[in-house]
Image 1 (spheres, one colour):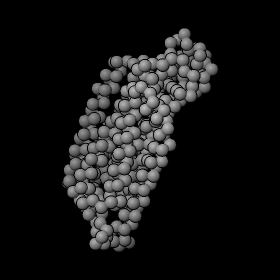
Image 2 (tube, rainbow, N blue to C red):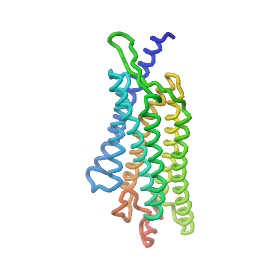
Image 3 (cartoon, rainbow, N blue to C red):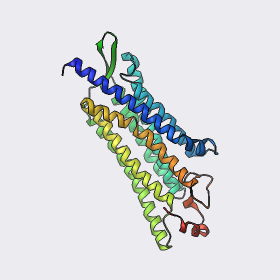
Image 4 (tube, one colour):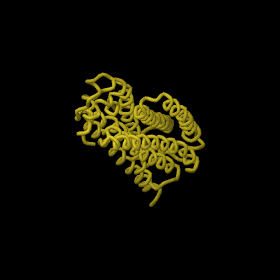
Length: 302
């Protein structure tokens, strides 16, 4: 395949992936819009409501920018590079927001323990510093990554990213992030085991929301692990098909899954006869019911 044919091939893949991203994100938004109106816009807002709106609409913004960047519309090298930097820094902000959601869930699971909250936030600050360092050292240096304008015909031009550094720095930087996510996952599983043991002693079924939140911690851990691996793979000079499939995942999966993990708990709560609502944690509530009301939950299914 000649260089010109290879460039056309890459452009076709880029445009196809862009259309797929726009379609998936738009379709997911339409599917969830009715629930969003019910559980967000028609109710009093809580902390989790603000977090949901942040990951939902900031995620849509990032997905659309990622889809339009590249070959779908022509951008000069300078504009392309500027938008690319905005995307990469914004990805870090988005993943930090997702981590805050996990921290908030754990705070609720552990009976609003201030000590645990401070510990989690204390460990989270170095993670933020790592994201900032990676964005500066890898994504913001022209010596590490640059834009190249490719001319196919006088009327067809597009810009693409050229990576000048191998995947190892990104791999090393992802290790602390993965370890922190694993730490959060372990805390969630410990809370679940304690809950199951207590319920077994009382001969009661496990609470739906404790099980759901731990399940979502597992899903997010797998999601972020995959995203970190794929982000490192971008620096490995992948083939066109592999590169675009990685971009398809990174530009859709986090922005679809993370908001769904929030709204599904609201949806479950709305369809169950819950006995107690915490005004602080109205989105993850039923395990905070007083002991005298626990008998009501014996007949509820997980």
